Length: 358
Image (cartoon, rainbow, N blue to C red):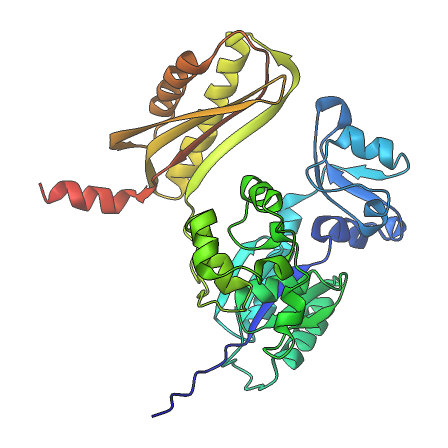
């Protein structure tokens, strides 16, 4: 008996230079000019995002703002308006919901949509992509790029292929040709360390991956091997994660000036503890794990965590735990970045119910 497998229709929708495009919409006189959304150069700020005009000068996200302004001295620098970005993101999400409730948000400006059985009964995923572009623009005045394919990995690869305002379709027929050209660092599960290891082994692109058997990939690269073997052949059963639970809550800060002053650093930890406690209580959450992150003046990053038996969500508890970790980690090297986060989150009402059982 032959079983017919339903081919899924997945879109990856990515807003084009989202924050910078919003700023150009709000300030028409900035259109066509390089715009950088980020922190102040003299306070060691970083670029959050930038317009395509700024990218032409080599400016990139996460770049120190000081470096970005040297590359593009005439750029317009703005700290951004995150409440506005969130509001517009919600408007974009409403457009998505008018087509399907199968939505996996990845961030404020991108999401996966499964439009296999969409609410408008449109058979063509490419037509859905065109309509989403049109309706997002009509509602917000902003453009987006869309990747259309039969799995998440290929849809995401496709969305970045013809930016801005592009639509790229990867079908089962042209998938292999497309995958062959993908740089190894763009495959799912490949981080910086894995990418370097793969490159040292002579694997630069999907084309190189295709030359290796599943057994060979597994023996050389462990659990990553079989995943790469499947990806490079367009095989993926990844389902959309419709509800993305927050896995951690935290704050970090790059300091204006490197310091070894325990008093200054402790003040930051106290501030972070208050912010984290507020966020936990607002969401009716508690945590069992706390992590401290320090980056020294040589850009060496260290972190340490502790997991408790009992849950916590009060500022005093978080601050005391943070200070304990700080005393264990701190040496005399000047610190340029300090961060604090909590994880292993659970709803407080669920914890209370569990306690009542005993």
